[in-house]
Length: 102
Image 1 (tube, rainbow, N blue to C red):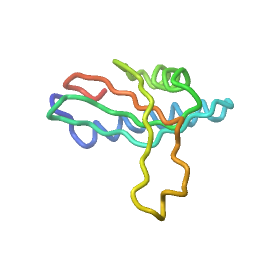
Image 2: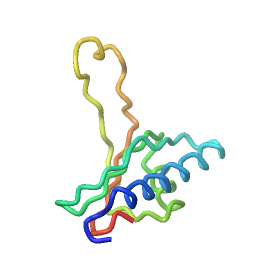
Image 3: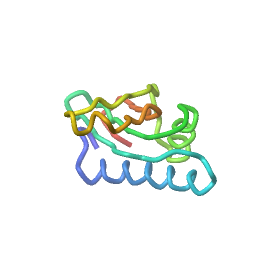
């Protein structure tokens, strides 16, 4: 796939979402939020909301999506109106490198 087409990225995102939904039906607290492919860096980022990094790893494993690493991400308030909304401190970001987001 080289530098990643929109269809390929959408297919990868769908795999992550379907795996997270399946785990959710099994009682695992994980939700796929977003997938983005950075063609200039040949990196695919997956953003999940989950109780643990292990839950994200399980999701990625079921989706057959390799991850170089899984790290915690924290949201910052954009303005005063949103400052009172608690950020999802359990969100995790997973990424893998390579020319193919699959």
